Image (cartoon, rainbow, N blue to C red; front, side):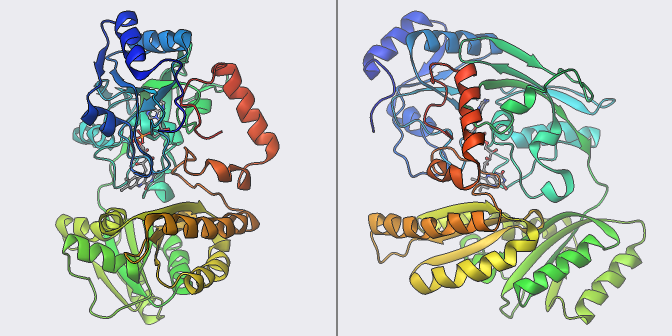
Amino acid sequence: MSAPLNPLSVESLRERFKQGLPDTSVATDAADLEHYGKDWTKVYVPAPALIAFPKSTGEVSQILRFCNDEGFAVVPSGGRTGLSGGAVAARGEVVLSLSRMNRIGEIDPVSSTVRVEAGAVTEAVHQAALPFGLTWPIDFASKGSSQVGGNISTNAGGVKVIRYGLTRQWVLGLTVVLMDGRILELNGALEKNQSGIDLRQWFIGSEGILGVVTEAVLKLTRVPVKHDVYFFALESLDRVYELFLQARQGPFTVSAFECLSHACLESVTAHLGLAAPFAARSAQYVLLETEPGARPEESEAWLTRIFEEGIVVDGVQAQSPREATDLWKLREGISESLSARAQVHKHDISLPISMLRSFLAEWEPRVREENPDFGLFIFGHIGDGNLHVNIQKPDSIAKDDFLARVKVIDEALFPLVKKYHGSISAEHGIGLLKKPWLSFTRTAEEIALMKQLKQTLDPRGLLNPGKVL
Ligand SMILES: Cc1cc2nc3c(=O)[nH]c(=O)nc-3n(C[C@H](O)[C@H](O)[C@H](O)COP(=O)(O)OP(=O)(O)OC[C@H]3O[C@@H](n4cnc5c(N)ncnc54)[C@H](O)[C@@H]3O)c2cc1C
């Protein structure tokens, strides 16, 4: 553990906590500390002092006020599927787990809203809304574990951003507790409310450094009547772009446009024991999901044309929901397949779509040439300009050598992202992992303003300290 953030030894802190908050459920055994002290990055050694499990907004307020008075650092914790170390507690912090605040209220089909507690699991919200023909359209591979509070605090994206936008668009109201215990009710269930600054937006995407989200009113949308899912093989990234353009102009609504390289396909099929959809190898693959228009013959004509024009070399269309799920596994299983095999250094960058190719043409060959032993896996939400770049450690080198070499890669990558007017974090957040690189994406003036806001809301710097800023 690097220098502890709390003024007392772990034992004294626990004792003080028990005296000050005798009714709060707390865990201190080694397995819980390990479990709740880390997220999916798995690169930090978890070392929290204790885990607190509040059951209401009022209790969160009591805990935060107490910790603020005592000078105890607190880490808000959701499903810990984060990929930037935002929920990591490695320095004797109090972890505030929202997992027991997981109630999902009545679905209101007239206003298409639902009030939920922050610990509600993303997929559980989907399931609750489904009988009403509704959904909360925040969708990605970790939805079975991630929580609404974590989704809001990371302004999560995912595979449907091209259709629905980010989490921000689907949050009407928030209940937030500040570090000194003050409770803010922000925007209720209002769609329209132009009455001064929209404070709710401060907390969406701020990775738990400004306040703890305890409840939210979520906006829901209708579940589409039908989805068509296609998986295409293409000979180059240029062809992927052509297909994207054709899909955007196609006789349907695009609900996902995901791209993966052959190395990604090999990794995921080997890991899941699935057959590759095509006998021949191609450079790129695209998973296209559409909401078809009223005339199926128009989609068929569109398909015929993209084959005739040589934009795709092969393709399959799911003929059943089960086949659609299997095709989606080829995309959604990639991250897990890479981590299961070896240590992975991950990047989640975004660029203006028009610059993706020039960026990759400049970056990828150089990395491959300098690191021929590394596995390089590139996939992502190409329709949003978001690339997930994954570098896998070869068995032949030690962890420290790997980290030293990926640092060199990072030092070249981030200036290039800046050159192409991109972002060092498209959707995973800054957390601990990307903090040293924040200035490649945000100006000194922006960072200074963020620090002022943090100082205003958390003057003692006790809420998620060391993260983002
Ligand atoms: C396989 C896999 C695929 C993924 N795919 C995507 C993807 O496509 N798109 C995407 O955006 N992300 C993706 N992620 C990342 C992750 O799932 C999201 O960032 C998710 O929103 C995190 O939610 P969580 O509940 O797990 O949050 P956590 O990891 O627990 O926390 C994330 C951050 O939010 C803070 N936080 C958590 N709860 C609260 C709260 N109630 N109040 C205040 N702050 C809080 C934490 O302190 C931390 O800084 C993926 C992760 C995995 C493992």
